[in-house]
Image (cartoon, rainbow over all chains, first blue to last red; front, side, top):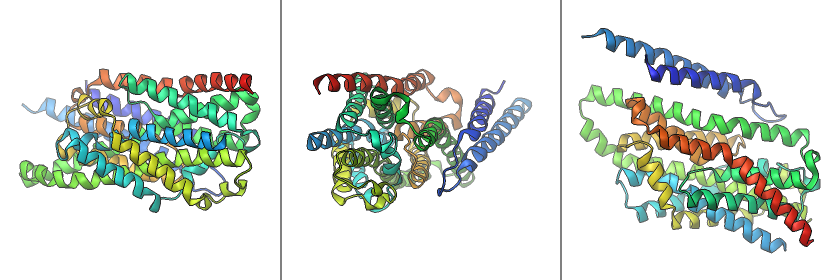
Length: 60
Length: 334
């Protein structure tokens, strides 16, 4: 089991769940993209980490 | 009385520098790029220089935690007492908790003790929600950037087949990344005290409330004194915390140090531009964990990270409780 992939997946879930809580303030730039992009980035890292782990296990 | 509370606010800023700014130099000291005294002077200079570079949006956000009609000298005094007590306690225990959240917690507690939930309007609650959400985001963004940077750098180094030579170059680069982090720290943390002093002066009718609509209009003496106090605090150092952050959390090489500090600096710049009071401690911890976990997750000493996390969870309620008590004591003497 790749613990790093699980860790990144958990981080992606936290970022995704927090995104709707980021307020949009009048006259200020919308920063909800931070939540969305970190969630996506952590999910990609989880996938890459899992692929890397699986590749290492397969190689002799 | 106003002068006394301004003095206490500056003392808090000094303690903040003492307690938090050590984080700016932890990796430089841990990787032996600079001697501790050289590192604190380097960080202090950039803490001070930050006033000329970044906008004062964070000061604005902090000044608006409590609705201005409720702000009084006693309230600000109690809020500061809560934050200072919490900082001293966590410094004594060697825990890298957040001075910023201690201040936010202190102001919330004092405000709540004064007027219950009436003290928080829709506007202040929106600002608090943003701060609360970024309590979690700042270490995660630091972690993500730290991990991504170190992976890119390690891949490049692997292709160049020159790890030792690259590590030597990174020793010099670390001076730049430490300077960037100190700039971010000075901008975000000194502005929190500016916000408190601005709120105090508005509460005492010594400053026009319209200054909050244009934070760049804050009197220069407030800006300079806050940056000066945090720089002095940094000079005095906080060696127990340097040890925790620099070597206990994970072992770092210069390459890792540069990546962690650059990731944390980028996060702090983003937060400062958007008026989000984040914790430099949270951010650099996340970045260090990100860099450490690029090798393997077991490279991170999770028991130390867990102690740090507990300090984070308890900071706002702890400082708020002390601030509430302080406010009631102030009221008795009134």
